[in-house]
Length: 230
Ligand code: DC
Image 1: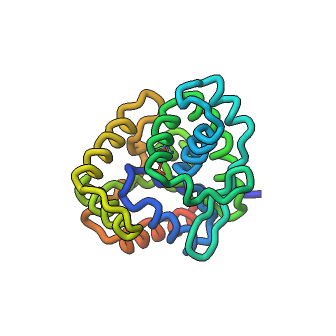
Image 2 (image 1 turned 120 degrees about the horizontal axis):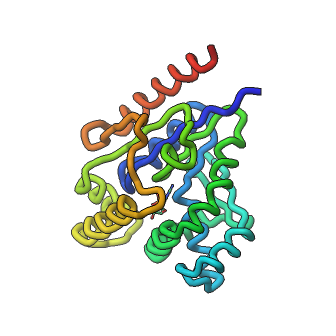
Image 3 (image 1 turned 30 degrees about the vertical axis):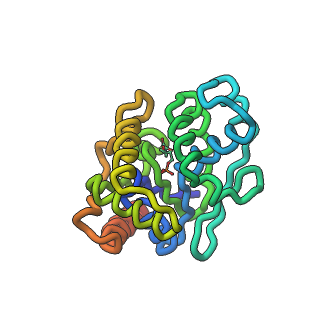
């Protein structure tokens, strides 16, 4: 039996990874694994169970008890934590901060490797995994690797617009400053820092509409699938 085709899409927050991954998964009929949502689930479970975000022993115990699953509906990739749909609950500002904290703990990163790999290989056809370290750590042998970036102002402007769409008014400068802090944390952490894999195709969505990013990636994936079948 041939192994599923794994696509790694890494990059900073706000570069467009989620929109692009969703569209690609739909076009290619691939599973979609949002690894940021997995870190967010761990953060939510820790907060709900009163586990301190820097207590490695307790975090490890927690990881062993969690069940995390994805289900794609028409519009959204739903995330289930122990059978409960937490797609909204994991995206609050408090939980985003907590997710960033738990994602810097080596015990959490190591504990989530198996789950991410299992989910990536669970679809017979193929899977898109989006995150920060998919091409470098989770699937260093992924058949296709992309690193999607965009300049910080453009990413913060997208986030600003997205929040306004949800009725949340937050000053642009504050969003940009928080984003810069998160970027710095992601890039400078010791374990699995955010960086392009040596063999990743780097695309910049500041200079390219997302529809073009999708078609560029899709063409490359289809080309690689064709050659990998030979
Ligand atoms: O992509 P996101 O904003 O939903 O990710 C939530 C947090 O998890 C963010 O702080 C970065 C972190 N993360 C990570 O460290 N490694 C991944 N593969 C995915 C996300």
